[in-house]
Length: 349
Image (cartoon, rainbow, N blue to C red; front, side):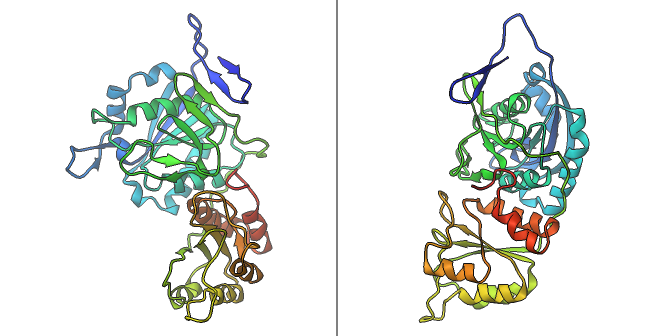
């Protein structure tokens, strides 16, 4: 039963004696720590995931009618754009038969996969929830059990978009950053409020609205390079890489700053002018976790903008890299700039 609350969120409550129709939820396993076996400090290895789920989390069958599918069984450091494309196509194929989907995934590249799915599955009419764990489900002090229960709950009642459920919070998928290796609150969303809190009551916001008709847009161009600006960066290094890429993401200082003085020979301004000459789009994001890029604020940002650089606003680095891959494959020419500058899946202001 859904109860509207004044904050604009709604609660999920159970009514005693009345059981609403159980929804059909697809649980897709891609790999990661959650489904691994092995005892620490030994190396973790992918294990027999679904047998462990049935043994450790039998409560899931009380929440929904579950169907299990193994898409892959890999450490998430092995996740690549080719697998994102396959996963998006598989989800688009299966979604019509279910009320929601939960994807179990390793934490290392979970933000990138969530971002990719948000761009490749525009106009979702059903929840797609990614989750994982810091410790395997088979371990006693694992966070995997609660994460699975919360993720299935979110797939039943949560907003109809790609989300990440972790540590009793539901985040917009293309807004998360991994912020912790050893704590259970592994993800944060500095520039966007959470979409749900799963405490004593499960509270969800409405999420994205007006996304248009659902369609599959699974093409990606992975010839993208990410350059992080740092003191001492030799401009010749990124200049040598530039002819080999189709797109460049620059992780600049603050509001989009970078060295531009010619005094010490470290100016990155030639990188932007050369990219413009080669027709390589450059998307600028900030190293700061909060707020975003404004290329009009400082001299170096102005120089980058004058050479065609595109502001990534408050996008995360993960979302920016994946969106550029997606834009290159689906929005060629002048349409690419417009695509990158607007919010297409809630990834930026």
